[in-house]
Length: 117
Image (cartoon, rainbow, N blue to C red; front, side):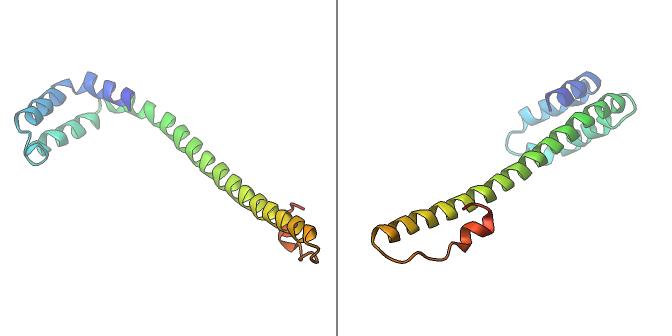
């Protein structure tokens, strides 16, 4: 994000300055009154001068997105494993309690399903 702002400032500094002045001058209504200047920044960044530099920043964003997706997958796998381990440890605790009170053991199919016995 910082790199994109720096490139925008370099190639579209005049548009950024005008937008900043408008926002500062109209604190109550800047979103409405300065919208056309915001659009001029967008048009400038998509122009021929800024586009090649900004396009170089896109691959790093895709790497960031892939990394974020990978961590989300890892988190969901770990959450499922932790949940299974928790169910199984609860079952083991219950079996030990039943055994200490001379009660017959219950079926341990919960642990076998998850691979934790």
